[in-house]
Image (cartoon, one colour):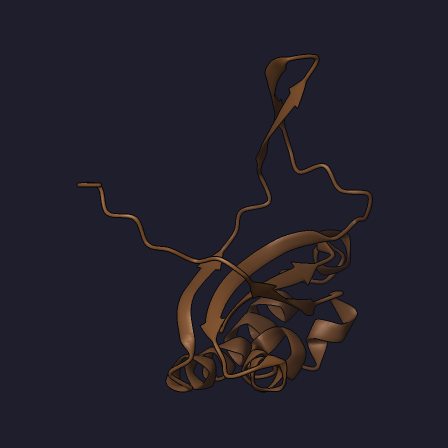
Amino acid sequence: MKYLCLGYLEPDLMDARPQEEIDGVMQECKPHLEQLYQSGKVLLDAGLDNAATTLQRKNGKLRMMDGPFTESKELIGSAFLIEAEDLEDAVRVASLHPAVQVSAGESFGWRIEIRPVHHFELFSPEG
């Protein structure tokens, strides 16, 4: 089964830290990412920009708005898709991610959300 894992962060908490500290934490993340990738379970990993465009149909018309619109101060900073036997296996694999391995992640508001993917299909441009 496939699971979409979303990595959340609180940018205000990170922005309040000195750049040297942030750079050090990012360096600390590298071996954890390598371990995650070496698990053989990661199908896709993407770091996401905090800029976003939101599409919404309202009053019969498609609207385009700048920015992510969430009720929280958190942003989704990464998304990765994994293949796992079950939720327990998905938790094991996702727990390799730096967001929950690096101790500074706690002070940056990092966390991982795991969601089962019920439909996944690759489409080819040829149809």
